[in-house]
Image 1 (cartoon, helix red, strand yellow):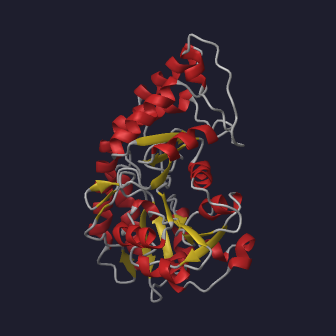
Image 2 (tube, rainbow, N blue to C red):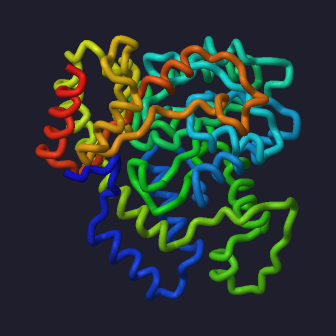
Length: 374
């Protein structure tokens, strides 16, 4: 067996869509990006969607469009990929790390409240591994304190909070199309919002601050001279990527259904192993299972790293649990004790999960985990 941690799920439709764009001669940001944005906004239930080069650039642009400035503090979980905090730093702001609920791996309104200071300008919860944050109390807090709320929804496309898809709650939400995410465009990101001014500014920011898009200039019957009202960036998605994304959106319901089926097998087979904990999903959440994780207890007969190596020796890829940013060398000046975060990052493992996984592959993974741990 040689089982990867993840594998993109493509078909002939995405291949032909990319070929058609290449043959059209319009391969940069153009009509396919616009179509992808419209279909994505419709899917999540948002009024507007703005495509970018990645979720990292999506978050950065969202911070700039929200007037997050030098010296402002933005509350983020430390338990996240480092890009969450990096985006805050690149916007000139200061990331302030909040702890998590170890049972959901997400920040809560209580952990956020503990991190608020007079300099706090924004809150950025992460729907970690696709599991939605308990949003309602956080939205209430942000409204009460006049704080900007930007959701890092990199992993959360298709997940739902209280029967409403992530990205459709009226906040700014940022998604990723990296190959390890639910759907992929190779690289790419998307921002959703219900705010028309924010959406319009995001479109300018991703295109060097240009006042009109290439599509608008192309379709105009009059000469258009663009203007630049602020300094922007090159955060444009290509039409090749967008064409692939449109095809991936069509596959999304099946992809999520299949991932949940695989996760249910893991739940059933692993929940009775006394030395690990299988994470339970809160009643308010519909989980897309972007990742499947288990937590090792102190009584587990092997360490986290030993288990990962034993799995790898059998041809089974795994990954450590989500990193703790505040423990990385480049953020050592921001270190604060975060016991929940430090426990989870030390003791959790991500197991292989992808739509094309066979029953034989999953049985092999489960069988060997049981051999090692029991």
